[in-house]
Image (cartoon, rainbow, N blue to C red):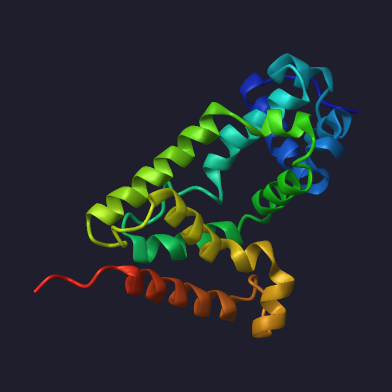
Length: 203
């Protein structure tokens, strides 16, 4: 039996946690509100009460729950060499976030998915990330002659590729990103890569 609501704030958090698991497992289109309620151990009606429906729930997951885990530069080291390794670590330890992103790509042709994925909060966070890159360029830790938006995409790609495509990672290196030895090796590589991108100091 799904539990009755005794603590609204806690119920809302349980729904968000359960929704992340359901969206990671089945994508937006395949996720079912009833399954989310079952995962949360709550009545299905509470999802409508707190979020109004599946689309709003998905937006809340991506705007609120993602701030706790992988995929955000917040909480990463301020300087570029360490930030890339930190970003890799956070993505590596939050596979549900990675799966949700992959589902978004697979479902990209679905208008409902696109509407649910597009939120002002997510756009604002990407603008903050671009501003971070620009600040690192200004500080001389990243190349100043590159478009900061394109550079951000390149840096995120470098950090996330093994996590997004673990089979390719294993074929190429013999290890998967969840292997601790590989993580140490790749973390060190990302630090060296970011350091190598930094412009040479003027003499």
